[in-house]
Amino acid sequence: MFNIAVFASGRGSNFKSVFENTSKEKIRICALVSDIKDCGAVEFAIQNEIPVFLVSSKNQTGFLNYQELILQLKKIPVDLIVLAGFLKMIPGFFIDEFEEKIINIHPALLPDFGGKGMYGINVHKAVFESAAKVSGATVHFVDKIYDHGKIIAQKSVDITDLNSPEEIAERVLKIEHELLPFVVEEFADQKIIINN
Ligand code: GRF
Image (cartoon, rainbow, N blue to C red; front, side):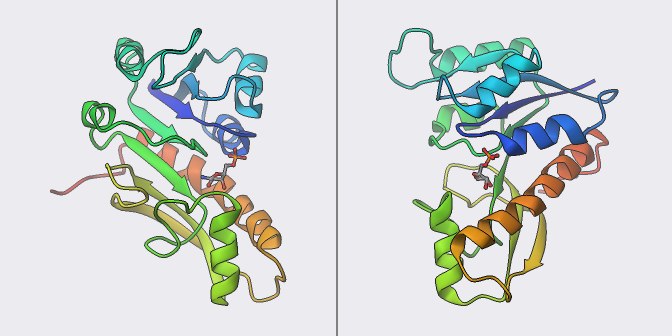
């Protein structure tokens, strides 16, 4: 079994898509990690009997800190960590523990429209204002700089007929829901090979 942990802070549609569109014989979602106790992603995990771990870098009752989370995830042990709309910056020591085992989905074609503050609708506003003809989604490794790690896969979509950032967000989300499960499957099949 290929064990994954999904990190999410919001409605969790990408989490749901990974759950529904990856093979249950090969891939097991062992944990949903969130910084928000009552978000859609946590609700979906509870409904589907996926263990939930709440994490906070402050001392919050009912939340693990990142050191404790490392221990829990290593105990499973987790093969891949999938950030799917996780909005908190992950501490460097956590990233060091899971080197090249953390991926993120970003709702634009990196390296454009990424970096600090580029999340949610902000990304699509920037794309809309740039008058770009295409947007899309990127799955990349996570390093210590926002949206900076090596790109694993991208999928683009025509946006010339769209008239608002919200419309772009909706079209890109559909692409995200295809790309993320695809990449997770590729990992499980050991098709992602890192050279240097
Ligand atoms: C997605 O657009 C994802 O790319 C971004 O945040 C959004 C999360 O949506 N990082 P959801 O919670 O998966 O529905």
